[in-house]
Length: 324
Image 1: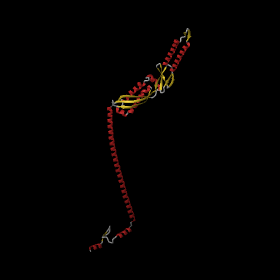
Image 2: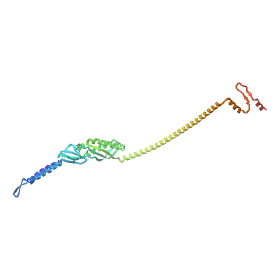
Image 3: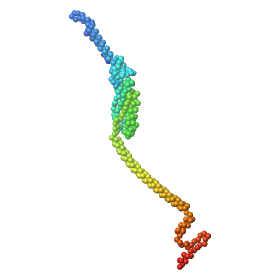
Image 4: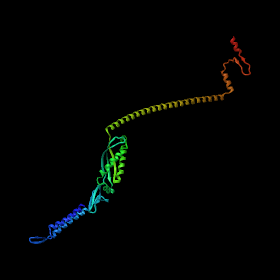
């Protein structure tokens, strides 16, 4: 737009100046001289310069990584210009906005659920949506970082941190960062700002709280160590009891096997004797028995013989010898 105004000024100035310095007739040495040619040269030169300015006003260059926003007398167009050379009406104005991934850091204070002061340092990576960049420019302008991104982070970090106790925040730092990122993304995406990532890089507490946490951690470690030792001793005692039980069961099994073996041996011996007796009994006859009785007799008569239905006989010969 500035070039158009300048072009108009140049054209007007060329006509005025040419008329002032080169009138139609000028008297020199008593002779009237026509200066129309010089006057026309100045005017044509002014027109050419003005046209060049107008043509330049129709061309805009958008750098790589930027999006062009077109405005006409303050009104934002509904389209954007891509990187490179673009043509538009000479009265249009082009504003460039960075659509590359950008990174900003933040430092803030918040309070946990148990009213502990938390000092937070973090960073956010984001980029603007090229397709809706004109709406972001129309609603916010080019200072969207300080107007939108910063305040959103400040508020959302405080909202999420207030849901955690200080001790839980230490243990669930990444979870809290993810919740903050999701909340910031939900609020900035409709505005045309894409949140790529958000990180809480450092969390600090007051010295008193850090000392209490350290003391608690030491106590917890000592308790865990004692529990571990107790569990170790219990495990060793259980293992020793199991070993004794196994040894006793093994000894009982050995004794049982030995007893079974002894009983089997006795049974085998008894079976063998019974079998031998059976064979002997089967081999005996009256003649064989008499034969053995005769071989076993020492030649002496018994002193007394008797039986069922018989008359006892006394060996008088032996008695007489005794009397003599």
